[in-house]
Length: 519
Ligand code: XMP
Image (tube, rainbow, N blue to C red; front, side):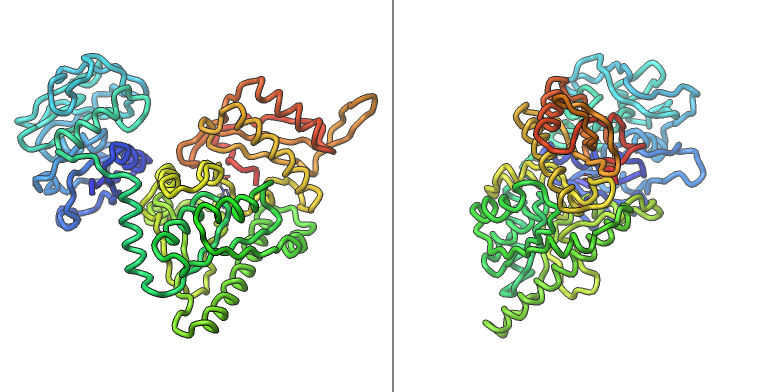
């Protein structure tokens, strides 16, 4: 793999993704990794990420200088570039000149390996206080900016490279080309990593892990669990049984998509559990968001456990050797990275991942998506032939519409919200906007009423909130500037077609400070 050494800002995940966009497999490792540990992973190349610190600060993450002696090509970015300069005997200075945001850079090395093919003047994205004042001996300076005499350097002989700017950020005009030059030209990596080799690799791994045992998978209707189960099905066929809990908090057509479209395209064996009444009873009268989340999580686990137990009994009755030993989970790479390095992060919401692991269950986990980012999961799903309605769908929270009703949840409110949500989705799709938005929660303010007029009569109905957001990873988000005519159409249809809703409002809050969901 290409190893991305994480110096502690949020850039490492982005770099890892950009490397994969160049069709080269990458993994993230912590900055306190030693040269020996790196050698043991036999990397094809190393990228040192940016970080929040100054190389001079006490406790600044340091670089094991021996990493630069392994003979493995290294690219240092921002803090990584400065850490490299320091370790190699160059000079880093606090010039008092800071550069943040879009910054013009003069490239002298337009025929170098790293910056070859690039224009002599370009806009890059910078974020630094310190600067490299003098390149290490034997290094060629490839670029400079108004406040940074050394904005990029290289030693082709030692295959060591660095840039002060952030090539992984889209605002750097030619950033991806810098990464690709490093990977393909400097490190000589072919760029042949793609979804079909992910599938082949995972199928072989799952077959080795599972053998002739039985496996169950919880389907949530979401992309991750659907793709995870489809890979496992490809690997072990009917040893897999999928369980889908219909908790009554689903969007319109969701059950049909799983029961018909998904089954038709994969051929998986599926059990659906009808649990609407059970969930509605448990939620009756509860309006506190955390309380709702906990109840939904608890009822889900109960239902899933009961289904799993029935399945185990059935399996044992028909074939006493084949107990159900494995559970499929759609864990993604960001979850893995974040739970490795997420010490001390505040609990903002109790995320309940439907399909999540009941704590006292004894299943062994099968996690075929552990190394993948969301867009890669979608690519794998398409490669496996899953229908676009499932693969292309927006993220949807496990607790479903239950946390998109502000106030207590009941069947009638769910029907209102389901109808409004369906209209919003239809219109966004019809306008060709699905690719532009990350997701668009539709929220019912069930405890709020406002006065309206319809026909000749006064109405006193509920508002619906549209919450369209753009995001790369849901950690941060901005509200999407949807065209007015699309908003008008959605508003018109919702107020006309959904009884008891007389107002549609638009949420124009970024995250932070607002979260994406309202609860
Ligand atoms: P927030 O509201 O925290 O949401 O900004 C970030 C992303 O996570 C989704 N979300 C959930 N997903 N179980 C899930 O599987 C949950 O309990 C849950 N809560 C929020 C949300 O839709 C957004 O994509």
